[in-house]
Amino acid sequence: MLAAARHAERLAHTHEQSTFAVTDGGQLRTVTPEHTDAVLEWRPGAGWALALRGDDPRSAIIDLYLPICSATSARPVTVGHLGQSLDGFIATHAGESRWVTGHENMVHMHRLRALCDAVVVGSGTVAADDPQLTTRLVEGPNPLRVVLDPAGWAFTTACSRTDRPKRSTSARARSSAPAKIVSAARRSSGSKAPPSESIRRR
Image: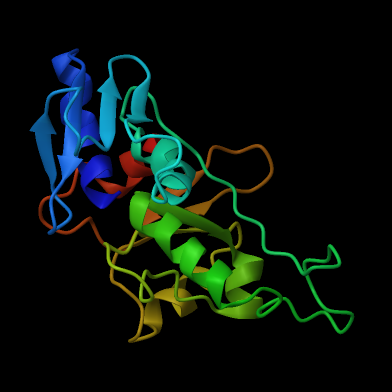
């Protein structure tokens, strides 16, 4: 999935349909559409599609994340993630919201982060849960952290922790005034866009 997400922008500019197998190292290898190892297919104007047979055991998990991997600067994707308990609540009766889901959902959330350029939270979430917003449970890069912080009080605290990645941005605005983007750090080398542009992309 990481390789598919990395290749999407380049493939979108080729305007050609391509079929890929996946190497043991997780990289993509071009194959013919009829090849028995074919896993993914890039379709111009549409993005990634499965090339696996429907009964292949890998189909379900790949199909779950594939739409996000198709994101490009011209066709961005925004993902909303909500954790809730089995009885339909997003917090306990005592107001606790940090651990209403299980480990499997945490891994799923970290996979989503690894495939996205940025993760957006509000200042209230930072104050209540103090999330790290990293991909520590899975392989993949940490996303840019975007804190919606109208008053500007939570961002300094969120960036001061030593266990946080250094790429952070806050958006501050009052009433109907245009939002002010405040960047604490630019993306690491090899990045596709500065923080203010990354917010608009995926």
